[in-house]
Length: 334
Ligand SMILES: Nc1nc2c(ncn2[C@@H]2O[C@H](COP(=O)(O)OP(=O)(O)OP(=O)(O)O)[C@@H](O)[C@H]2O)c(=O)[nH]1
Ligand SMILES: [Mg+2]
Image (cartoon, rainbow, N blue to C red; front, side):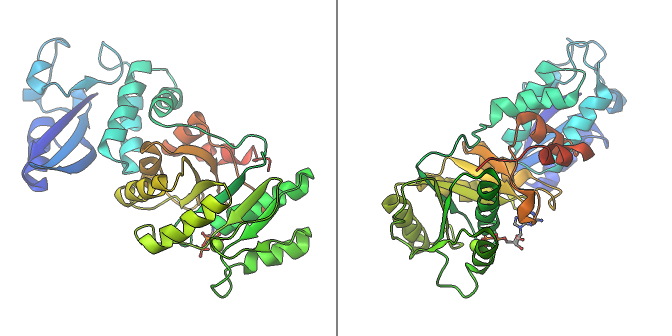
């Protein structure tokens, strides 16, 4: 299996180059705009390459294919052609930025374990950070993110977890101006006997133990929205945690991650992993440096949150049907 990058003025031109040089079976790993036009990265199993481009001597012809060529499957080129193909297609499917896909596949190729999940997990460890929640400290967490990301459900899941474990956790919400904003939390509070504090944005929650503040959905590109959030974070001396639903546009999510990083966000909770087929957006956001703190894979509050590990993420990327089941085995302790 080989990976090669093509640059051209237009996408059509680049795809013609891919077709001409690698043949019809080439797998497109990704593309990005460049100053010159567009860059497309494609991969091919040498057996599927047109005759004129087949390289029979592994050391010969590599130069012909350019510096960006890399073998997947070891030095005798194709120990695992099927697995390599599966890996490339699975990674490309999610639509993460090309640099991320390339890094994941290069490292996986180096590791070349008989299990592609293990090879991919090694790539994942290199590219992403994993920063699970430890024992609840006295610091406040502020859940931030775009509208509808799952912030309130995450807060509710933490509340349920704390009720189950018997550890006190104060919940507050600044989503008090929008009709119905805090309704779900309030309903839950009745059941849990843990009434959330209605907190005006930019005000301090007077509570010294572990606490979580749910916030209203914001437009990440609106300075006033972000300033209001900044005030809430600063006055509460809190750690902002980004909540992002899987399934969003990778480039949009990269931008969103950068904007929230300016607020002090260093980790994220990925939600809706149960409903999204493509997690390239989440991968793109995390590739900017945000650590994976936890995952949400159900709208049902009682299902709780789950830790995300390199192997779990690898299985999700590989669309392993047992991957989602993996997430169900563990629960975050609030
Ligand atoms: N399937 C699924 N649905 C989820 C998950 N997390 C949240 N949801 C649903 O996503 C929708 C939005 O969730 P909320 O928690 O209200 O999102 P929010 O970020 O608080 O939204 P705003 O406060 O309006 O910004 C709801 O219908 C939730 O039930 C998840 O992990 N899986
Ligand atoms: Mg909400």
